[in-house]
Image (cartoon, rainbow over all chains, first blue to last red; front, side, top):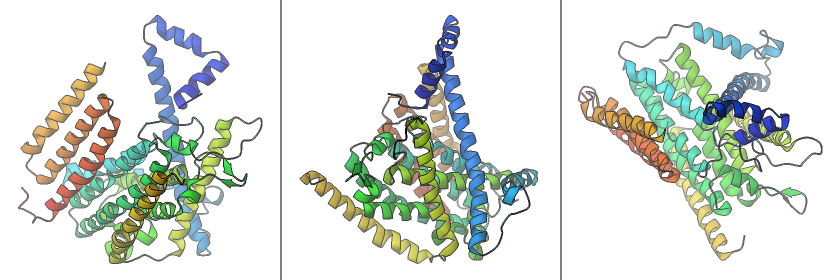
Length: 365
Length: 81
């Protein structure tokens, strides 16, 4: 049984027959742990490259889809159908002057983009991309994901305050009010699933969704916990700060919200962090409610590859939904947003939790 | 190996705790406070108590520091120094 990507790499190296010679070489010098560190670093680099490429592709897809909805072409000039537009944007942003406003708090102004960018990447550690394609199967994976996401309000608040700009501060205040009120239904909806599975590990959650009912309906938690799924989806889109809920950067009122004053690479970090967060959140929705990497097993193809493909397809379906929503739905009002969060979603999430725990205790499901 | 990690985390935690009371600006204090809470969470991870560690991050860094920052921002500019 291969548990994570490290063991998978060791398994593949052993199958080719080069693991033992390499390990022996390191053992001669009494440094077996060095090989372990090298393999883990390589894994993390592969993951980072994959995530950054996906993020670039997503920024292209977002603009392209927005254009298609509005009967435009969107980016067309750089590369086939403008596919290299993100690279051009990246080069442009690197070349821009890095402006720090005169009244800004330099230290916090520089620190804030890192506090938002690093957690956006850390979320990928316990996310299973496929059978055994996971950096580390933490025992408390889902709690880890929620805790890491809870760091973003701190960064947003610091960025808004350090910019010393009223639009930045107002955007930050709104973003944090929204983040705090939507983290609660998010966590409560996730807890209902955790109660059902009996484990916080993401791998255990996916394993609990293997198989089908009546050979047709997959055992995904979207069918077991439909209310929790809807709440989790709405709360996730609110956490991403995308259009029906994008108060942190509602352009007509706040210029660009908390990153109004940022330019150059710092702006690029917010931009990349936003799309990395979107990819991560979609991955979490797929893992918790849409069966993760489970799917029909194909002959002759290793399960690692098919499961990766299933995971990517499902994740892109969720991302497509989020983008579709952004292109077609108008923005809400801030009071409507908070009312929805506190007066409708939290009571519904609590009710869902109550019913789930009652049914589990009674032994019905 | 684990002793070195313990020492590094201890130094970071203690230094940031001292900086919480030493720094001139309240917002800087709050940032150092977040650093010291993260250090405490790292101690829990060293003790293999992952659940407590991430609850520490969720509650203290995620909620308490945000709350403190919110209160600082409601004070007038100039009063904070």
